[in-house]
Length: 433
Picture 1 (tube, rainbow, N blue to C red):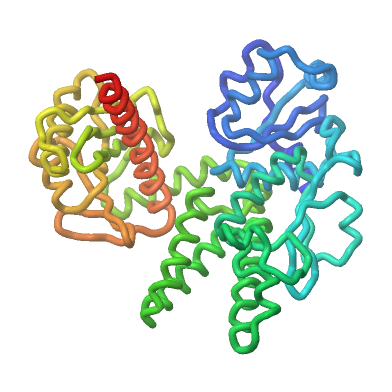
Picture 2 (picture 1 turned 180 degrees about the vertical axis):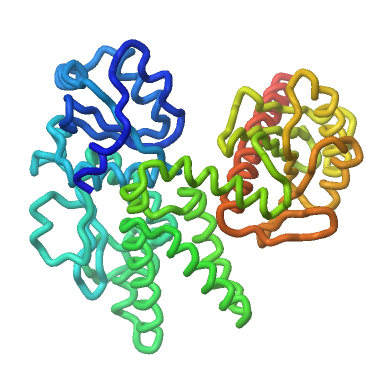
């Protein structure tokens, strides 16, 4: 790990050097000749790096930028991965300008205590000498620590308090569930059931902080299916929600250690996603994919979105919104056909994609095909995620699922943003009448 950053391609810091940096999540490292002097993380690498040269910087930051000669970066797939990778690299290199990480009085760590009911708490460096199940960090800012814990606690509730007599405040809002205070006052066999459930949450959080997000997802899916087969639908639904929320905060799932071994993992993963999809649908040389989604509320203010991915990455210059004009509210098939007709009319101006994906099943795909015959069209259905190819339904897994689901989620988000905007205008107009 100690040689990882030194082995990366370096970008010389000259005028407008940051224009070649991608607009994706990742970590970046500033060098003074061959020495790493600062490591940071970003949701948008290009925007973050360029900000160092647009703003009035604090004295210490300005000094660091003045000394920096080169920059390197590693792309990752999510903010959570960036946070965890940043902490590991800071711990490995202890760069001079990561001041907080070098001062034991300031940096925060995440600590999993070694107790009958392990707690997950923030800690200072000195706590590393205590009895711990695991110790993570340093994180360069307290905000980073609390953001990680807040995301994970909503998925896998845990305790951060010592044993008491009554259920804690967080137990009432589902963030400490089951609460150890409640468990200790429960008799067997329910005590054993609740303790097992609590410890499972702790194990899942530890695995995620270790970078094994993919393993946690697979275990949840396997257990969810087993519970469904035994008709324990309530517990299966709980696991389904955990799985969905975990996929939301990091997609695709990728152990952070992989980035340590292969700094080009981001590009390699995107290429693998495209190749996997091409193999699945038997189409070659897919570069540009468009994904369409319909949004409406009880048939009102119906809208549609078109998001475009080029080489498995979103290209927002090709994003489009459609306001459904002719199809009756709530008729998804007619709405899809209207959108397809309007999209075809713009082939010359917007270009022609290599593949179209519509959110929906056979009906939505058929509606699109009635208007567009020049481009292969497939649908994506849910529960489980599967591609609709003609009358065939193919279960999506692996890299292809990551790409298609990422496009579907982006189409959802973009459609609903416009839809909510129209609803807000309708409410405002109603209030003014």
